[in-house]
Amino acid sequence: MGEMGEVFRVMKEMNKQARGRRFDRAVSSRVIVEKWAEQRGFELKVLNDGYHWQIKTPSGVFNWWPSTGKLQRPGQSAGGRYNTSAMMRTVELWQVEKGEAHD
Image (cartoon, rainbow, N blue to C red; front, side, top):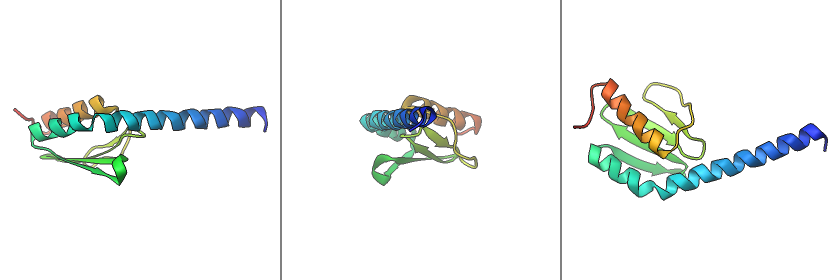
């Protein structure tokens, strides 16, 4: 394997490990997210063995993939890299922007 091939192999392995760490952190914080969602009247569904989470809110459904950190807001394409706390903040801010904030 050439030098560039080796670089790409190492990068691929590093990305795989990072996805695994993000997924593990999200799974370990599931109880926190469930409580957060319940307190705000949101419905949380954890799908595909934890690789896809849906948060149903008054302003729409958010889709979050913990292993990649991608978050899809209602009516938008998925993007960004959100850890658990950033995902929760973003969902809350979206509610404020849409006038659906929890008291």
